[in-house]
Length: 554
Image (cartoon, rainbow, N blue to C red; front, side):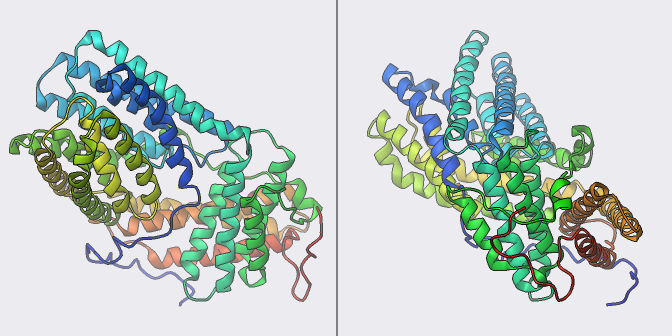
């Protein structure tokens, strides 16, 4: 490769691949946490309503209970606030939906309000990085409520029920803090160490080194965000910080990293024993400042404008199309469209395929289970609980697998107020899924995102500046340790952001050519500077110097 950037290459022709879209992967390490939490959050209120003979109110109880799906990757101190905002956001969307439903019977108006709510929920969830499951659950709750018969005098009671179950969901999600108070931070650090070990296995030049490096820096950045989510620096947190630094160092110099040691640390963190102690030079150990790379909410909302337009337009058109075809449940088409929109067109296409396949298989599962669920209301509740658990078990393997359980669960929820003909529900759901996917994807193609190239340029500029700043400090005879540590961490964050921005832009259509070679060269020079900075800090041994012994202590 030449040492100077060439002209920007032309963007590849639009492709809509099918290979790999339905491939089943491994589940996440914590799939059981949202699965158990949502079951624990749904069961008591639903069984209470069943005992009272008011299962028709279970839809509003489910609205609050589904908040238990969120924030399981956050430290408990931060989780408390995030879950609180999720519950408030759910209540806000539900309130708008219920009031609107009580004031108008116009299906077109209801679809319009639902589309605007879906766009707001999508943008706010993406900007605040709330997820998984992101906006889809909130959109499902508000959209379904728009088409539920409602009067103004019923709204306060329904909102109170949702608020009560939301508070219960909050308690369910916070309860594990009593047993393992640092569990989320430990898991985030273990993930960073494992990703760094995977990159170290490539030696920095072997097959798959580029995606392994990108995954490593993303995991390290996520670990820092987890550790920086709370201000208190306990002894456990300081030990975790040192381990994250060791992961960073392995990424900076993979040929000198000890992959097996990194994995051993990761295994220890996933257990219940004490946090392993990693050795760092005293200067570096005193300057673990981290990098607060979070931008203001307003700054994060700006780049999401095209996504908001896609969501609003796609959801509205999907709902209108469902109405025009007389299918009967336009909110299903609206929610399908809302679930499609990802960071770029390529990912949106993949999600559309996954959604359609999962929903079609899911309605077949519902048709098979319906006779059992119709044996009685208790059987209906038990089937719903089983599918809620199954959805979280499968969705991290592939979105379509999770949809196989989500679809029958959603159909069962509609029967809390009364049984419907199975054939009618199946037909309507398949039709609305196909309409929502087709119209929603068409809207994604129609609303172009020409800002993607601008964001790549800004990310390149930020990475260049971070590298130059670190290089200037390296040139000084005695740079301030704190400044050098901040420069190294800032450069790592800038390079991770550059890779994520470039990947997102590469999957977008109808934009100018991207400076792909310049991105590669900037990454190469940036990572060389990272290695030099780590060596200057004493985080890397000089050539020919052995690494620290296993029993070393800070």
